[in-house]
Length: 401
Image (tube, rainbow, N blue to C red; front, side, top):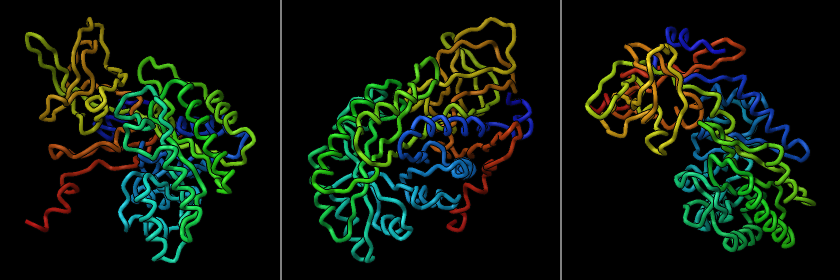
């Protein structure tokens, strides 16, 4: 049991706290689900890119799915094997492609024909051979929030099946491109197995057609998207999830790559915040806390729900309120129309399932400093990112006054 009050007293708030033992459990559960086939778990850094989180996963044997050259550098910095690193993302600058090729990572995941031509041109200039995969859009509805749906034709990600075939044929004939993988990712926070199954069948059929054209695909990248419990969601069976992939790939000799992000860290993290005070008008009650939308933007951006606990709970009757932060925006809230007892100054509220897309999406809006981050390993707390200061924020500006 994590003693949140002690952590609050020691590190102040807002504060992110991550349970590393739970991260280990999540990784091992997913690894076990795929143990019957050649597989590789490549953690999606965008969910939580703290170097200590990455180092912990590196020690477990994880690879990394990166969507920026900065994330590639983070992965390499903590000792992730370069042949376990995939560089994805819709828009890559020439210098970023060049650096990825020079670092000799496993493969660059392509999102368009134009991007493929840029990679080929840059590889030719460097006299290198670029190992590539292509992100294919299987046009499967993931039944999730539209902002995190990525596998439909209306989304900006990937290419359609016919375009992918043409790209693979071109790359296979190129002197500077080697197609070794195929990739798809239909969306995030998916809590039904069927979309995963449907997408795997579509992509396995594409794999078969590519192999019949003598294109030697070695890596079948199924992306991520496994949903977690925020409130009352029904989560999927990892065994069933993996078996559906195995069934689709029956008879095919490929390494399955899975790219979990939210699944790996989401339920393992917490955001701690203190109550500043309350205010009410004739229609609304507000609990004002020291965390804000710059610390956790998911409720404002996605209308997402994060379960919470008032640690100084009392016997007073609960009533409806919004939990809001200090930012000068009406959209600055962490919870809306929830029931909570009367609070007082310095009461501690813990927001749960905040380990994914919490700190990584935080900002310095309103010149607010970012929260500190703490890891809990075997019951011992360790600061893994210090709290930002005002001096940190102006470091790149002060010389230009």
